[in-house]
Length: 359
Image (tube, rainbow, N blue to C red; front, side):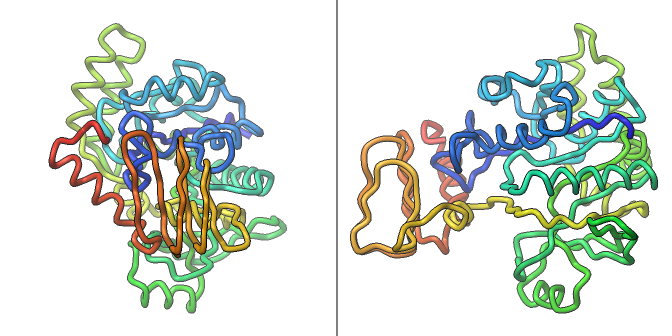
């Protein structure tokens, strides 16, 4: 097996997790479950079967302090800071340029930093099965999550034919990536079968991926080569800042996966959730007899099906059901669980009115 590298993408803003998620410490750096942050859990998960010296993390400059504080096991030179967020394709391309200098024939595993994954052994086996496909078929492989309900918040991947023989993890050739559907379309996907949720995790030979960038995003490829040529030089920071700010922001799904033909999927049957809102945190939290959950000092009186977080003091709920209450620093969020996705609108209002002290 070729050397395996890992890229953890940690540059998101996590606006739906306000007020805990703030500009300098967004969602991926929060300990939503237990003592470890989502990022720390992700690093730990990969560190069980990959060398930490082969793990790269891409984040924003304004998150450098918290990133370095939470990842002392990762070499400083493997922490890559984007001058500005440009979506997933430039992010992955930039990290691939770093890894290519070390080993152009290596395999790279790309993962978000802020997803919930359980069953580390099955996760490892799934990643290694995908790595074998990437190696043997010169393919770009995604991990598809078996859908359990007609979700409208995920993209879907339709598979064409199965490749699995004796392997315990099912493997497929991909037919197409499809956009986030409406409910009826998602329900039809589940009824039809052959569709998986797009997990946002990808595995590929570095050389194969960069060839795809060259073919489908040639200007980005040229820009990344300019940046790579200056790595290690005193002028690297200025070159990165100038070039990277000008590149087109585009997702790897739009830029590569929807166009390339050498796309494969391995079935991911470990427990997975992208933790898109406080509702997701509630669903995966331990609950009391009234289905209440949370962290910190809290009191529930005649209340059910609710989630409370407080960083200090105490929060008391009386006669409430299906609510989320989050108290952090100078801000308090109260909303119905069914409206948890709308928290990002609060952040937008705060930004538009320049109330940055709450961001």
